[in-house]
Length: 492
Image (cartoon, rainbow, N blue to C red; front, side, top):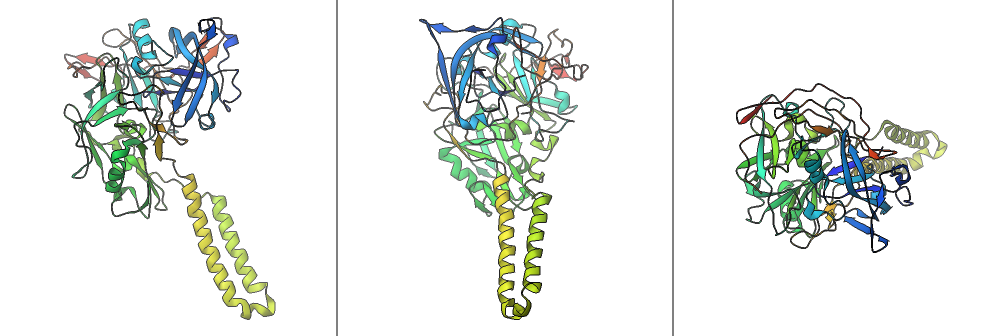
């Protein structure tokens, strides 16, 4: 079984090859086990490819095979068969990446996965939805991907979609899931009032990425009055940071609570989940934003939807991420500190014999220094263990944006990346007779009036069988809540 990240910030599918000697511990694609596998040649030579991410490059050859996601089979899928991964990518939990953006960004997989789903599975709506839990190990509300529909019941009985159109910033084919930002506010302070303020909705970016030209101002605004070093603040809690308000075209406002974009330990160390989008002129609404709002990517109507239960109020509907207690020293570290202090005390008061009075003052100073050193060691360990957010490098797919820059990708390892083995659940047909398939992850035009057909939650797996890339199907919640349409509105 191969584990992939469904990445809305790229368009190519790539998997590590069994011939790869620099792919870490990743599971590999066994081409020799597939009867439908084909190598791709041009003028007698295999076509090579290279994709550049902020965290490194992957290199390899182009190939074609049958891909199965859950119980959906896609034929003629071109993908990258990777023979080399940079060290940073080797350390990632996922084996490969399945790009879910548009053909204008594709280097290898053209037609894209989204295009193939539309042409080969007309029974499905050309859309997919993502629910990302801010607690990836939460078995009760696991993250999942739904292909062909959505399940608003996970948000609430009165949940509705708030749509914003996908826009293009250049001529040619659509590239990214780009939306227009009309305003970003921290309290009453405007942070993005430019008419050229845009954002990419990108599940492959960990936090919220901010253009270099605005990064310092935004960070200074949200950390004002706090003792901070870049994105790390001390002696603070999530309540010390302001809520953010993102206004997207045409007239939607989406609050992002401080607890959505700040993670704090009980020791008072807080990390702001911002990244600097070096070389880019647009914001990136990454996992921090998608965790706060159940997100629909609707290629059929070229729009992105964010679900709210009643009035949009940020991520409080599925948990207060900022109040999760993290980075507490484990028990064994606390025991070592206590033992160390005890040994020093015993040495000072019982091991010096007749010299105890002469050396008393020195021992006291030594004990005091040791205590301070132990405290700093604990703080240092926390700093080492905290979530890694920071400067982003130019990257993404090596295909250029309209401005000539690459999509910035997170340059550090993200242990919370929503990539997991996928399972499969399948529902019956929706209101228009079309089905939906989904995946569990362990990590344009103006909006239309009619809601897209909904579907049951599912989970996805990519596996390798003798006839190519085949789905590993496991029954999981086969009877989800059906979705019905009434007039122009969808009712659960």
